[in-house]
Image (tube, rainbow, N blue to C red):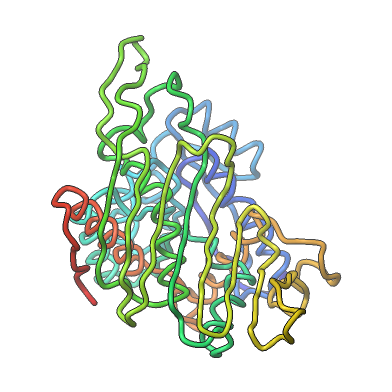
Length: 376
């Protein structure tokens, strides 16, 4: 923490899982990194005064409100952190940007392409900096994977295979939620956005897709006890063609019974391969044909102080970073972008790019044809 630095004052909208994660990320980043600002939690908003006051007390905010516009109208706030359901992202983010504030919005940027386009336009008209929450991309092991690909250690890349699967919707008797509403985005928007972001982070733009979006559980029990029809996807798959000519595939599922956080990928090249699983997020496995015959096999590369910024968290290798640490790394980069010393790591335009991919996959699934991704 830089005690002499100017304060960056923060307002948070939403105090659920991701709201708490943002708070933990701010707290960790403020102490682990030498930031140009001291991060100050000032005000929090939630759907009721009770929830907001409880969050303020437990998370360390100075004030609370049930009206998120109070944060937008507070001239003393510099940054608005948005962790509300996807359907509210556009209205909240545009209001904050129009008020001249920086905006840190959880993914997906918006449930529709039109909404994300409006958000990108608003960002372009504002002096505020923007960030979309794709913190898996801040993992030092993902950076090592990209460096191995770029260095040529894998040779010519031949294929990519990725999956993001969890099980929080796997029970057919679990309740209908906002995620099951079409505006919620389905599993492709909720989880598929992560593996699409990782695919492009590693291998560059995806140019064409062939999608298959499937609804497996046809109805869910609503609050009134009646069954509601489900039309969003429970499982989505897509073949991919990258602009480089590399081909691959992705899968997203929230029905993967037993899987809590399977964000996995493999990249295969003519000289080697890499394999990664988010369930062991401090490890990357690397195979090289350069190894002597009889000694070849996947070797484990374990996160250590040699993989920046791991050393800021722990001086010993193998002691491991966690999910909230990745959020802190993401926040540290965004704060430096706010200062102007670095580019925005994953701004609204980047978030809009993911929405373009999602829309192309959905369109392809309906039409059952390869679909070109615009902007490539």
